[in-house]
Image (cartoon, rainbow, N blue to C red; front, side, top):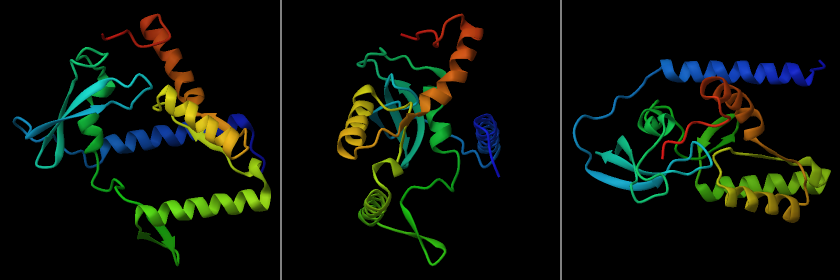
Amino acid sequence: MKLTRREVLKSAAAASAFMAMNGTLTDLAMAAPGEPDKWVKAVCRFCGTGCGVMIGVKAGKVVTVKGDPNNHNKGFICLKGAELPSIVNATKSRVTRPYIRKNGQLEPASWDEAMNLVVSKFKTAIKEHGPTSVAYYGSGQALTEESYLANKIWKAGLQSNNVEGNPRLCMASAVGGYYTSFGKDEPIGCY
């Protein structure tokens, strides 16, 4: 079966849309009422801006979020950041630990075991097929410094130029939507 680039992109977009709709329709957890037990300082990872947020935790569960007034966003957060609790608590089936397939079944594994398996698979692929047999698909949520480091490790360390980033696919459609909605190629600054 021969697929064109366009067919692959259309299929990926359809699958992403289906997963997004399914995620919003199944098993949504509601935030616990009342004031959180504690506030935890964190960084929102929905985009590379990295706004400072304060995560409200009650009984070990994320229940609310607010902007960190001592961060560059001056206490303001966008709609995506405001939805952090509903996304974190969206499903009980969220994977919170590594699993390794053994005898056809996924079984819980330690982080060390999982990382060692990944390292060994990479070593095998590079040894048998060369450095161009592996690729890196980066995240739009990575900060500039993280992306720089990943590129250095990949290109200088592993000797592979097979580097791609989610922003090329994700932000291409977002920029079109932003421009149509706001008249600019980015969301209106909230701070």
